[in-house]
Length: 192
Image 1 (cartoon, rainbow, N blue to C red):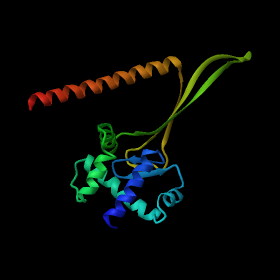
Image 2 (tube, one colour; image 1 turned 180 degrees about the horizontal axis):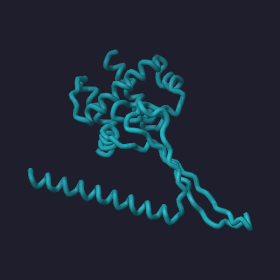
Image 3 (cartoon, rainbow, N blue to C red; image 1 turned 30 degrees about the horizontal axis):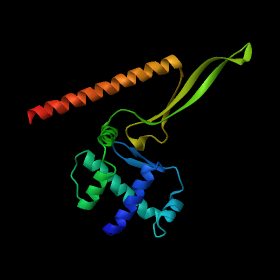
Image 4 (tube, rainbow, N blue to C red; image 1 turned 135 degrees about the vertical axis):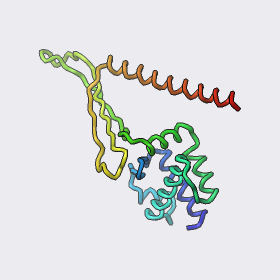
């Protein structure tokens, strides 16, 4: 496939990704694409000459390139492809960090988080809401995607108080990460 056609597929891939029509699963030994749309018909709408097979070939070549760049592995690709990946999939440091962690971790990783808001009714008076809570559904998978056919689930019910504690804990974690990054940037800047 020539570079111009590759880039047409690449642009469509990134458009689908940026608009959440596809999501990408990054794992140590594999990568996966999950589509929330009928890929074949969406491709035909984007360009009547597109085929799903060619699209997937470009997609997996692109994902391999993304992973190689992030993991600092040897790369043998056209400079135009590398630049396109850098300007799209890797333009944000948070994206690089996310991919790096997903591709290097030996631990389970979160694939999806969903929630439902629940009401607890007084058993003597069903019209009276005694409490509100949330059902938190976390889908997670093994670091090796090939060993996990379907994600594991953790489902917990949380009170408003527990949610507030979790939010505070996550805010502390984020502050610590940001402080560490600023300190390391300052230390590297002063050593230059």
